[in-house]
Image (cartoon, rainbow, N blue to C red; front, side, top):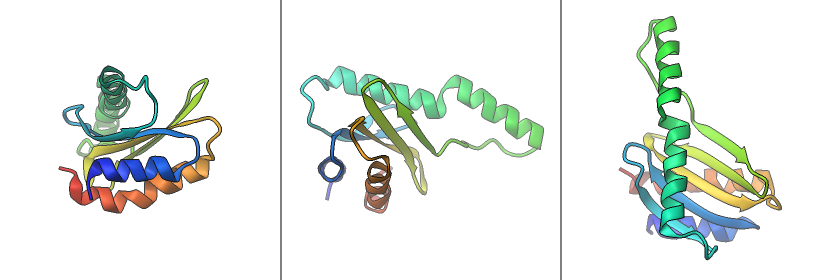
Length: 134
């Protein structure tokens, strides 16, 4: 099974799903993607991947994580593990793959989607995705 196929399965599994992708947070590259929206061009997908990298590993996020580590006297870690974002028309579900700190799964749905189903489908797929990610 491939990352693209798992992304396809997630899109099929969630009513109102528009697309799913796995992003390498260290490079910003898409490791796999599936969608059913004609205007999700490669440029659009790359922009969404870059935005996800910013949310999880951006300069401001990193600065806050550095401050927390300094205040606590510990080594810096990436604290953000999941994000749910709502736009006027969509939900975005984003979660780090356990044991793969630089692999992020992103699911985009319309706002008709059931939030619990979006999270459940993503979390069910994490074990399948982990061995396929660097």
